[in-house]
Length: 88
Image 1 (cartoon, helix red, strand yellow):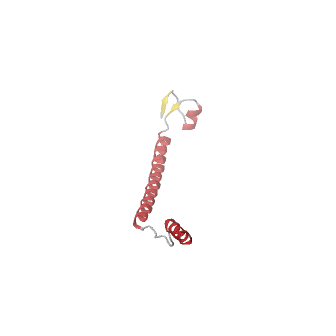
Image 2: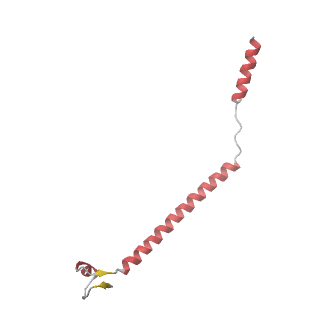
Image 3: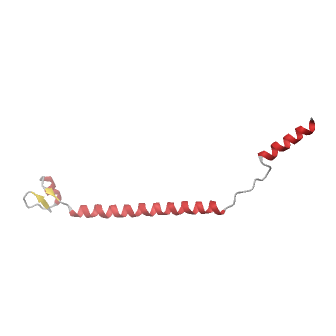
């Protein structure tokens, strides 16, 4: 579609070469469709990442904290203090 200028052009490329202002509605529609496709893919990726984060946080909440396998630091210090008091 020619917006400004007059003439009869065979193709869009010929009109652009002549310097006529043209509205390439096909290119516009293609750009809109490409944008919608990319936006949908990004939306799906964000949704998937959010599901993974939610599943991970639920797994952390469900799993109880592991009991320490050995004595704590406080227990070891108390044992050392008791042993030193026996020596004196």
